[in-house]
Length: 267
Ligand code: GDP
Ligand code: MG
Image (cartoon, rainbow, N blue to C red; front, side, top):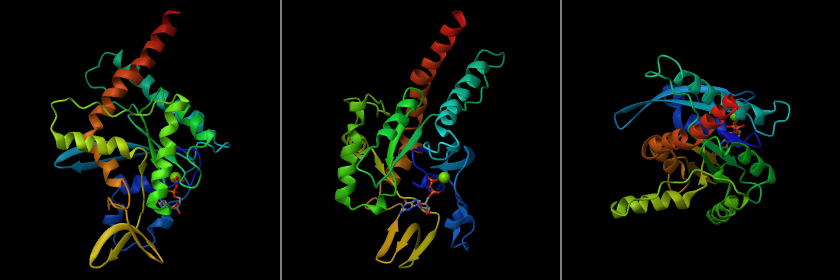
């Protein structure tokens, strides 16, 4: 989870996507206040179960990239390199059958909903990372935008390619895939950047309990597809595209790193 500015909802979204403390402790109503400003790179390891498949995920939370005091930019960059380095070392070691893979398979890059699309600094941040990791841009705090604004901002962000930045590309569908599958893939492609909403509180409304945000004029539901792309994102991350994210990391990003290492060694 990376962004240039802090306060875009990275820590909150991690909680919404993967952490379940909300449901463990139903009495805490002001859980939101417990999330304090992230000042260092924090690693969360969570076990989740998706349709009977147990997964162990490591999620890296970071402070804002632009936090000059912490020089986060270098830290994230270094963090990704260190994981590659560790893997490279393990792979060259004796016990290469049981390597623990800590490589970073995906980077959710948070774009502010308040600006006019990408800032030059967003472009710089992504440029620093795009050859090392699969970047998936997300439009933060989508509840602060109208549907038309979401649409416009999404269009702006797709201009990212003009800057020579390679974000994660969804794999091309085989022509013999069924139509439903193709439609689903097209919806995913068209949703980039995913408009997301996060919340750490459980709301009760009309007899239902859900993760949401309460406003004077109404309630936003994190998992309501009419309100945000949260479910699309979660599904692709932990179900449909997890393997592809790993494959691309291994075949492209790690391979680049490895080639560079070997080149440096023989120089
Ligand atoms: P981070 O610095 O990127 O980790 O941001 P935080 O997760 O700490 O959130 C910063 C503030 O934004 C907190 O007050 C959150 O309650 C609020 N926030 C988080 N996610 C959302 C969201 O999706 N929509 C809105 N409107 N506010 C959010
Ligand atoms: Mg944070």
